[in-house]
Image (cartoon, rainbow, N blue to C red; front, side, top):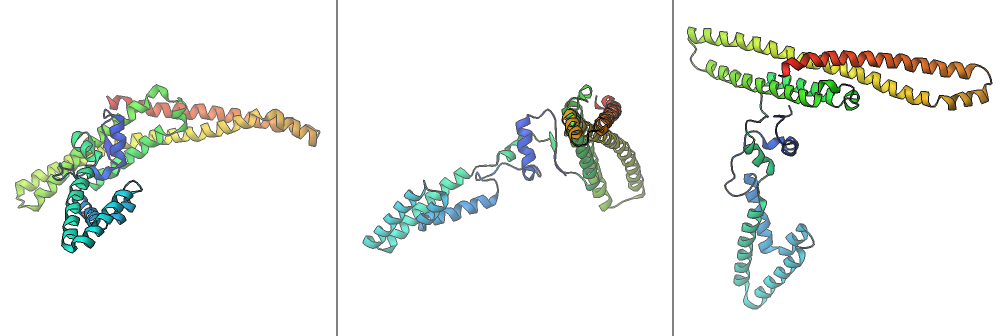
Length: 304
């Protein structure tokens, strides 16, 4: 399941969060040591250890700009070892390691997505019960099918304002599913405890209400799917019409070619048939687009 986002979120924030959904759930807390995850501190410590004792190696790994510094440190360490013995050289290495650890830990920072997750908490949904996640996935597929269709990009459905209506539809459905997920988990937790007859009756009533709500929301999702199917049918007709239009534009060239080779009425009949077929497809396209619009306009009252 892909996360669902409030359409009012800034597009840049929404795109960044959608690209890294692993930072959205659970909502990350503020890091204590400046790292995105605990492993960052260990990574900084490992790198710092290499800087303390093998600076040339780690300098090469970090790029050419770090290599001269690493080589200089390595030479200084060897000179101290040669002139003053192992203990001073070891002490210097520990000092370099400590400084490198603090610098690397400070530079590790926190993922910007984690910061956005805290900032926009409640304006995205990334965790649902399996049944609810399936409904959201169906919704997202239907919305994507419409928004990515050729007829929508060509403006043939512009009177429905899909780019505004459908994201709002998806978010409203996601919000309802999130509440249903919360109630499902409450019910499951309640059934794990001591269940008296009165508690059972109440839970059963809640379960019945949940079923009614699920059925109602499923109908709304199915309406979106029906709209998407009609749009895809119009898309097929539109693409076929475009292809035939291109072929019809080459009619004169084909007429001349056939006239040169066959020298009979075949050329004219061939092009006439092609033109007639294009006209039929154009009529079918108009009908498909009309059906798609009707299906889309049915959704508009529900989006309000």
